[in-house]
Amino acid sequence: MPNFLPGPARLPRRGRPAARAGAGRSLAGRISRNYGTGTCRNIHDRYVSSDVQYAAQEHGDRGAEPARLLRAAVVVNPTKVGDSAAFRHAVRAAMQEHGWSDPLWLETTADDPGRGPAREAVAAAADVVLACGGDGTVTACAEGVAGTGVPLAVVPIGTGNLLARNIGLPADLRAALSVALTGADRAIDLGVANGAPFVVMAGLGLDARMLSDTPEPLKRRLGWAAYAISVLRHLRDRPMRVTLTADGGPPVRLRSSAVIIGNVGWLRGGVPLLPDARPDDGKLDAVALRAQGVAGWLAITAQVLLRRAGSGRVTRFVFSELVIQTASLQPWELDGEVMGTTSRLVIAAQPGHLLLRHPAKRP
Image (cartoon, rainbow, N blue to C red):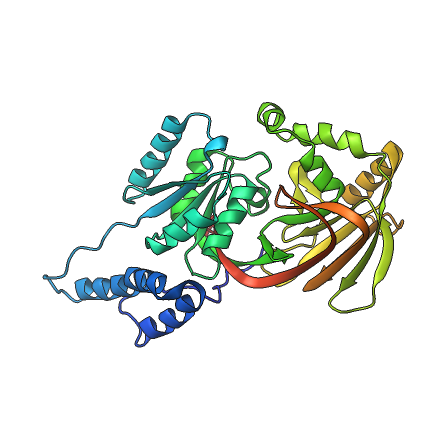
């Protein structure tokens, strides 16, 4: 089980007996570099001032104002919520149960799937940002909070919810909200592909075609099974020619049906596609899969499930930076969102760049 480690931009936690000397200056330097002085001032006021206030209360200053309640920002993808009123009621009930104030409500749009609302939450001095949606919503919110020291909590209400599954988040809404408000914060890595961030997986080839061909109504009706139906159309596609260069090493040329890069490694159903991937190891893992036809894909499935080495159908890499070049334009995706087509993909790890809320460790 990975250790719970402080992030590179982690802020002081509320509840310390006194603020450290120079904390404001150190915090200001870290945050202003990423978000400017206005956001820096808001975050400084939230964390450093509250530490001083707590210290005054502990030392018997009767004139000090009572400590304020914590406040969350809820960034929700409205297309993933069936009953908006019931969802809001559940969130407010969780806030009340755990002693938080009424949250700041923000919605994603087709033009802004979460980055803007998450940045607005940071500017509003939210104590935690709840990303309510699928992996695409989580990734967009992660881009908005990464590097600020404000933790991101995941409320999984999407189709895949792979990040939630990989870090052990419960699928039940009430339980997930409880983790969001009471869990432990841990710094994890981000991946960046052609300048765009991802927290779960990036893919080139077959998986991007599968996502592109799966309509939203089918996902709402069948859930994860909709992807299985879509992928059947592409089992006979010819593998593409790719060249992979990891960390400036010698290029590896091969034919591949899909190249998948992961910050985490487990798919739905407990499939260990990248079993050694860890979100806090400072590296990314990749696998190139080569198959054509039903028999070929059955062989790959067995090899992945049984974790067998060899056969030439499965090629694995661990890297800090990977350059993928293809002989022709290929579709690519990030965390379930199709990004378009490309013949060159540059992927890099950003170690410890995101503070993510996890289930608290059991004593």
